[in-house]
Image (cartoon, rainbow, N blue to C red; front, side, top):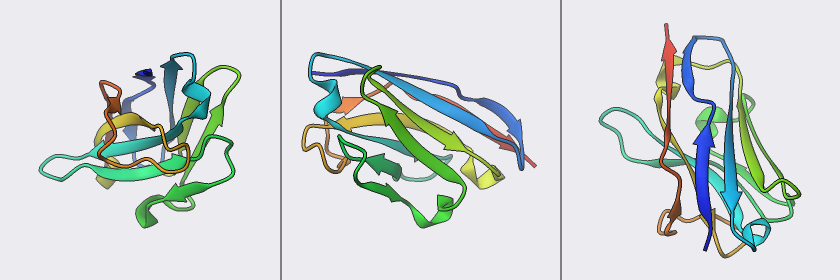
Length: 122
């Protein structure tokens, strides 16, 4: 079992930056793949980025490539999403998720945080 708590959301102007953090608790949290999903107004939840347990593999959705960076610190059981050059279309609730596979994070995983709001004004 792993519990996830996100922080770092907020209101930012277009072109600005935010860093989201996710604290994972649980004895084997470092073995899980970790990821960030988002759900914008009237949109379906989508995977933004994920990272394997050893940081050997990362994935980014095309719309954030070159702007967002996912990273993790297994010693601290933390995962981060650095978001630069934010755009109004990045406005969404961002959710941290964990997957026992250790490699990818599937939307079917049962391990989710409560979400943090990111709002980008134009």
